[in-house]
Image 1 (tube, rainbow over the protein chains, first blue to last red):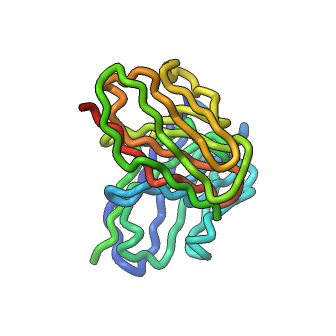
Image 2: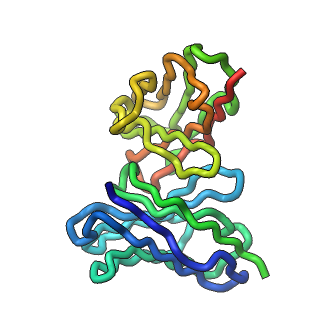
Length: 117
Length: 107
């Protein structure tokens, strides 16, 4: 069973950049799969952020325009998310997901990120 | 982008009752649809993919159907542990999009 664990800051100031990491266990990222991020604002629904293939092909949600980037670190077996120019609207629980760019049966427990000064 | 809508927003039913949740898409596709169940404090869990295929370990009382713009998730006999929010999600086109969810409660 693939295990995903998100990590990063729980509090970020407006206009700053968010960097999150997803550590993958029980599976080698270099073996395949798409790895992605989904977020959920407090009391709200789900929003797909983007997905990245282990070789680097990336699909991103246009609603984030150029603010978001994803990366794969096969040496550490980790996925990363970078989101710039944060506002209060980016306050959400961020989930790491796998194994495809289509639907997801592996989810991390999520990390709550609050954007506030 | 494809907009997903779900109805009803909240559904209340008795244990053992058959419940039907609706999901509609703003444009047509064949079966590129998934359903998720989310209980409080937990990440979503995949129930159904390809509109009607149950994910591993999902009880047989959960079934999915539909194509085009109208899809349905049916719980044949509602159990207390089924209290949750249910989301549909399309993967026919980018960006992947979710419906707003249907909250299922027990009477």
